[in-house]
Image (cartoon, rainbow, N blue to C red):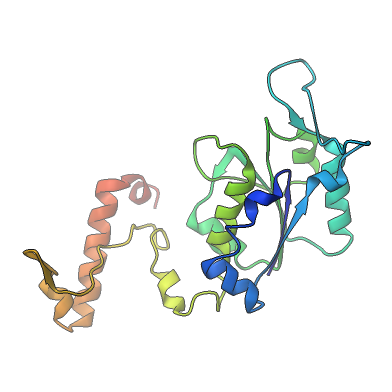
Length: 226
């Protein structure tokens, strides 16, 4: 999979992609992540990429032309399955979306910044808009990093034990059950006996029961939406 990211602040993305699973996925050739500095497509002597709003109002807007020029340049090199805009005023990212995107070949992500982008970009070029939550952060770079991490870890081969990803929270609309490791007893706190029994069918039943209980307590909306 190749993921291109257009950013007004590309340095923010250096660290998230240089560690852990995402780094290993790149090193093994499973994923290729390329960040493009929007400023390189800026206008005029000062490489302008933002301007004030028509109609007045606080905050700057990412301009139309630099983004279009960058998108067209990238589209001339490859076809994109999705062109995604990271913005708080969109549908919130969930595991189903991450699963779907992990099956794509080429993805282009536009990281929002300032007060957003000229609406005409969203109308003509964007195929999917994604938020990472009902809150606002400084820019879409960290949101893009979250999306990339959520998607790349699902690509076959990115995680050594692929079953691990399949048992994550939200894969089956349930939160993960409690997990334990050694020692079996610590300061009077004991691991549930069922997990030490070796009876794996019963362990699976216990985990499903606990996952349902935890989801019902913390995120009942996940069960209601089934």
